[in-house]
Length: 293
Image (tube, rainbow, N blue to C red; front, top):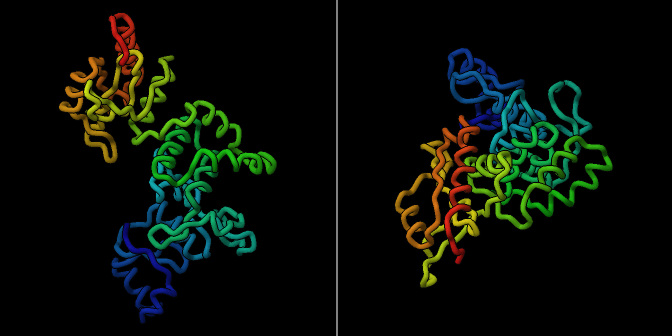
């Protein structure tokens, strides 16, 4: 991310307003918003405008913009998003107004951002259930929020009639108790796909051992009682799992389980076909003689 700075920071380094204006005209910098600049000639993005708004007001980046900075899955910035105190000037029309406590703000790249928990709760008012679940799993995986903390926040949200409480409760009700978080967006999409086609709920992060008790591998999703596990192939998408043929062979040799291999393209782009194939794999497993270890 390119450097974004305020005019006051530039002045402290001896760069005058006149020099800033000249650098903008020369294409060396761009004005993000009043009193905030970015290095380089490219127009500011919505994320940079969110950061600029937070820097200019002493507020915090929030909403989808905060989710993006925190690394949450499935957030999408459609407008600058930042929050300012209720006592701030009314000149920032696009700013949200709310007084944030100290534990609701963190620093990301030296920018004030709403905390992992606060951001996740805010996103429930903006995302649909599937996308919020995807953001939730990534937040849990990054240890930026916990199920207990989310549940503890719900009574106050409900009392203040904050939008998103019903969505949060509905999504949390779908999670198996004490289930570990998924470790990639593709894994979350596969969990959602299995649910949509009526498949049994898969077990997450299953450790596989051979007959001597020696660790063999860990698989993302499996149905141990049926003797089925999945190999997910992110097809070079950033942050997604990489297919490992050797791991697949080791698991099959140790357990005799059937393997279903699914790619990003299949799960993301053609989910109906992927769902039918998943059901066929599970049906084959049910038809064959298998003794769970």
